[in-house]
Image (tube, rainbow, N blue to C red; front, side, top):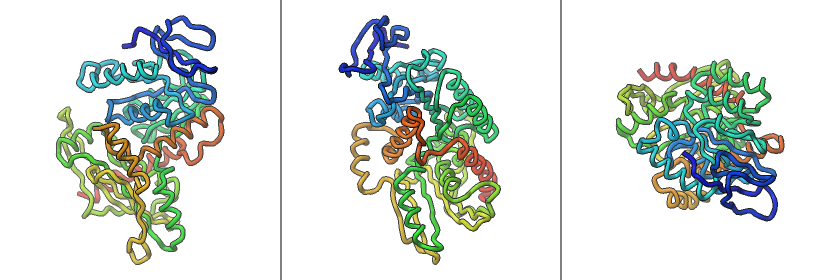
Length: 401
C-alpha cells in the first residue's frame, strides 16, 4: 500500500523541496512507517482528506488535486484516507486507476496514503479533516476524525443521510469542541452574489437558481447516478440550492407556506443501478417556494442539463431581466485550461473550481488562526437545509404522480 522510501519536507528553513530520507529523521521531521511524508508549514493546516474517490470522478480527488497544486495557501495536503480503493475495491478497474494516481502522488508530493484514520500519527499542526466520502459513512467518519485529533472538520454536503444523524453529529462535535463547516461552495459563488445584488435593486423581483450536471440522458448513465447518489437529488445535487434558500431567503420547514412543482419541466424516474437494484429519483426538478413572511424563490436542477449553473431575476410581470452564469465569460478560459489539463474529469469540477478553492482556503485559514470563515455554512445551516430536503422530496414526488 505504501512506498518503501520517505519523502520529507522541512517544516521551516531554507530547504523547501522534498527530499528522500530514511524513516528515522532529525528534529523537526516525522517518520511514519517508512512511507512518504509531507508537512504543514507555519500558517498551514495539516489536511486529512477522508474519502478520495476515483481519479477524475470523485469530488475528494479534485479537492486533493487543488491542494496538492497549492491552490489553497493555508492547506497542506498531508494525508489521504481512502478505505475502499485501499481495501475491498483495490482490484477493481477504478481501484487500479486509483493505485496509479496514488503512486504518482506519493512520488511527486510526498503525500501519505492510508486505508483508515487509525493508521495516522497524532497531529503535528492544526488538523483539518475534509470528509468527502459516501454520505452514509459520514456519521462514523466524523466520530473517527474527532478521535484522531481534528481541530476542524470540512464536511461535504449533505453531511448525513438523515436529519436525525446530522443533528447527532452536530451535538457530538460541539461536545468535543470541534467545529464543523460545510462544503456549500455556492454560498460564496460570484453568480449568486451578483444575482442577489441585482434582485435587491428591483422591488417585486423573483430569483430562480438553476443547477445543471452533464450526465448522459440514458437509463444506464442515470441509473449509475441514482445508485451512487442514493440519498436523492434534493439531498445531493440540488442541496446547494436549498442551502442558498436557507441561508438567504428565510426558507425553513416551519416557514414554508407553499411548494409548487413545475410539472411540465420536472421528471421522476425509477431506474436500475449497476447493482441491479432500482432507485426512484428526479432526473430533473423545478419548483417554487413561498415563505410565510412573503419571500418567493425558485430552484431548477437537471442531471442532464449541461455544464453551466446560473441564476435569473424576473420582474413583477414575470419577464427575465437578468441572468448570470457560472462560469462567466471571465472564467470560461480557465475552464478550457482545466479541461485540457484533466481530460475525462467531471465537467462540474471546472465550472466551480474557483469556489471550491475559496471554501477550502477559508476553512483551512480558520483552522489555523481561529478567525471567522466568512460566508461558509455551518453544520447548523446544514441541519436546516437537510430538513427542507426531507420535507420537499415526498411532497414533490406526490405532485409529479
